[in-house]
Image 1: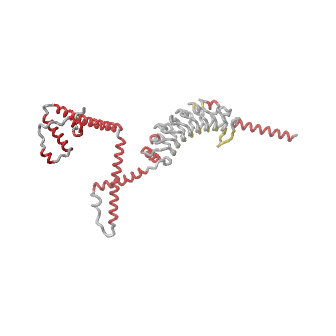
Image 2 (image 1 turned 60 degrees about the vertical axis):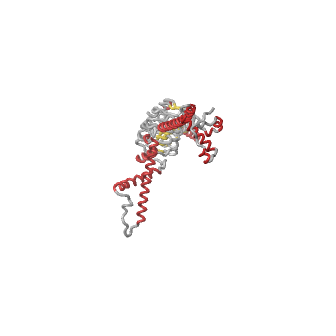
Image 3 (image 1 turned 135 degrees about the vertical axis):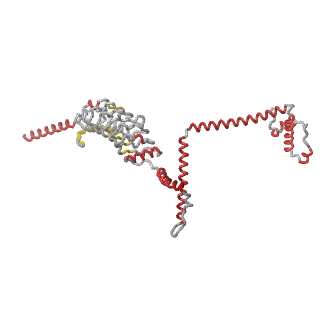
Length: 411
């Protein structure tokens, strides 16, 4: 009997202790509670929850709401549920598409917030203004292509914006993140990134830029040089083979220019060979130097031409094309009118009685063409002298042999 009473008392005490522990951890029927890095944690993942109203006690310091069906966070919703002591909050892999301006208000102890893998398209700048202890903010796998979040927080040190379909960053994107030291922009769709975007982030130590479709142009070259000058840790995203050669050319160009201005060509100043000197080596060295100079000049000329073409406005090419087309059209019209006018004048003169001289010359040329095409012998041609009063060829002859009379009037 005593053993049965002792067993009943021990079992009742154990249930009471478990109940007290459960209340202490703030668990509910939808969550499991434990201690995680010294924090009282409630894990409510994979429960198909549509709301944060699960009856969790306000004593909980870390909550995992990942992989549920929560679609929005209203203003003061977390504070109204008594979750003001949270230091870690995980909302990843939900369907959140809207967050109120004061959704995280009164969560003054919040240090880590995970909003990754949701349907967020925008965030208001002052969404985390009251979370003065927020250090890590994870926003990867959202869509910020059209509305990049210009967050205003003086405490965020680690910001993850990877896989957010970001194609462009405004110059003031991170101007309000004064303590930002690590930035992840990997796996986006950016083609280039201006170094001015990062100049306001004076505390930046690490940046991730890999797996973007970078266009390795001058802008990206300046960005890489800027990150190197700031000693920011990053993985090289472009290999600039051209600038390295250009730097070597500059180093060679400076001393060679001075020599060419102050002294005659290198071949004239070659010293006389003495014992132990290798003349072939000297000649080869001079030839290589001259080739280097020619390469430098040629490269600089190409660069100047390319820069001038790039800086030229396209309107100049349109204007030049218009002028050339107009000039060609006017020239063709002038030639056509000249030919038509000459034929017209000749036909008028042929009908003018005063134009006997012109008519006679035309008759002479026509008769000469007839004789040439009829292959008249030279003797016959010498005997048949052209008389000034020779009549013009008959109309039938002109119409049958139009190729002999280019200015004949067409009936």
